[in-house]
Each structure stands twice: as structure tokens, then as C-alpha cells.
Image (cartoon, rainbow, N blue to C red; front, side, top):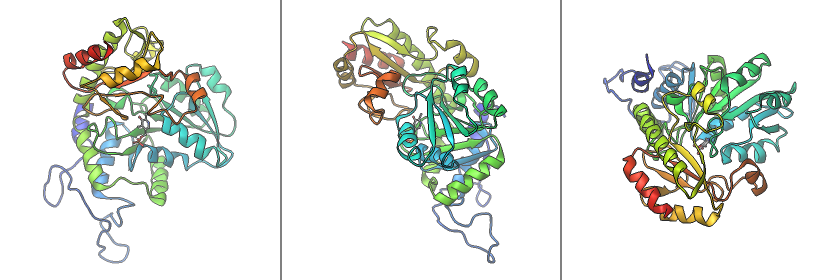
Length: 380
Ligand SMILES: *Cc1c(COP(=O)(O)O)cnc(C)c1O
């Protein structure tokens, strides 16, 4: 099955009892047993629920994995991977991460005795120099939030495979329509399904997809034993979102590059961060590991370097909504330093380039003319 068919049919079957084309929302905590321990495969909804199973099968299908797991949020999915580590273990993570991921690593797991190295994955020699006999996990986002830096998934996977280190990729920004980390050698894909997979800004959800069934089973045990599962209503919403993932992300990408090109020519704008621009420092890598486009996330800074200019621009927007989050059909704008990345200490934030004049756009699927007119008037 090809991708656009998988988003609709992958892992799906009609409801066996009624023929319902979409899986019913099984609002039930428990399932009747015929005889003690003898049941239909479902016992208690923390372990499994049929609506969640339908979503998990779709997740596995679109990411080309053996197992999908649906969580109560993206961070719950990340947390599940972290729980497989022990004190003394080491993690190498990218130096530009979603703020909440960085907060979890440094304020929860670091205190529990896990050592983190935040490194620029662009420099593979430097990355390798951080590997020790205790390295258990490599965690990357690509493209990153909000600076759109890329990591070479295939090159990193080659190293982690040799050394038997688990390799996880947060694929939230790219989505499986644009990038398939498991095909490039990663062991785990993580998603904030709150974003493009759900696609309509109406649900908080997370996902893990594993290449191998054994690892999926192990993670399922941790999820079951700790409890951060996705409810049936939310599972239904994410599953419905996935059915249009391909056409949404196609349009997000068409609009995204047009806005990046518009901003690049604007006299008030300094840098534009978008992997589909020819002068993105990793444009060649973007072309190698991404396909079908480069997504709807665009960040930029002002020539003035003034925080006040960024704030005024954000206040002036009319079609774009000033809000955290991304990946929904509607266009959103965000000030990372004051909003999504406020949990990163200022010195660290400035060091990685999340400056006070940085604006991040989640370009939606509205008419491009309206989006550009809105940016134009807000910049005036
Ligand atoms: C939003 C986001 C997360 C966290 O997901 P939640 O669903 O908000 O818990 C993780 N990674 C990236 C890249 C995100 O954008």
C-alpha cells in the first residue's frame, strides 16, 4: 500500500459486529469475560481499548513500524521511552529541542541520575565523541523546533546500530508524509499527535512507533504499568485526522515555502529558517531525507533585532492567531522566547539562537493570498 492509501486504510477494518466504517468510540473501562481469564483480547482499557487499537494500527502503518502506541500527550510518549533508562545511563540529545522535552530531560530525569549531553548533531564527529559505554539513547528532532535545524537520520542510525544504542526521532514537525525515520534506520518514532496527526487543534495526544515488535511490546508494558494511555474519544479524533494527513501536509508545505520565500525578500526581515530554502545550511540533507515538501513551519528574525518589532508584528496579525501549538489547519504565530520556549534558561536559549526577535509561524491551509496579505499588513 502506498502512503495516501495507508492514511485512510492502513491497519483498519470495518467494525466486525455492525460493519461501521469508522471504529465506534468504545467508552468502556472494562470488558466482560466468558470465564476467568478468558476474554476477547480486551480486559481493561488501560491495557487496550478497541478505538485506541484502531489508531495504534494506523500509526504503525503510516510510519512503517511494527507497533504503534497512543499516549495521553506527546510528552507522555517521550516519558515512556525515558522510563526504560536507569541511573548512570547516558543520553545524547540534540541541542535544539521542544522546550517541554528539554524541561523533562533536565528537571526530572537528570535529577534521577541520567546524564544528558546536548550536542549539535550537524557535527557527527563531535556527536560520536560523546558516546561512552553508558550511552543508551540518542534523541533527535528533525527539523527542530523552532530553528528548523536538521539531523542526518541515516548517518546517526549507522553509528547507533554499530554501538547498540537506541535511536529515537521526534517526527512531529515533518510527519510521515514528509519523512520516515524508521526507514532511515531509527528504532523509535515519537509524535506529538496534538499537532499534524490530529491536525485540527482539538486534542492533546502522543504516539510512539517502533521498528521492531519486541521493543514495541516493552514500551507497551511501561505504558500499561504507568498509565498514560489515550482515551477512546481522543483516539477517534486523531484517527480521523490521520485520514487527511497527506492532503493537509501537502497544502501546509505549498503555503509554507511561499511564505518563507515572501519573508526572505521582505526588507524588514533578517533570517528565515525553512529547510526548503536553497540557502538553508542543510538544504542538501533536507532534499535527501525529506520528500513531498518541507512542511508548514517557518521561523524568522527581524533586521532590527528588536523584541518590540516581533511583539508588534504578532499583535497586528489578523488571520494568524497568536497561540502556542502548531500543525492545525489554521495558521498560528508564536513568540518562542516568551511562549513555547520560556522554560529554557535565557543564557541557554540565546546560545542556541532562540533570540527575542524570533517569530515562529505554523502556516495553515488557508488561501495563500490571505496569509501573505496578513503578514504584509502586520509588518507595516
Ligand atoms: C508539542 C510538541 C511536543 C510535546 O507534545 P504534547 O502533545 O504537547 O505533549 C513534543 N515535540 C514537539 C516537536 C512538539 O512540537
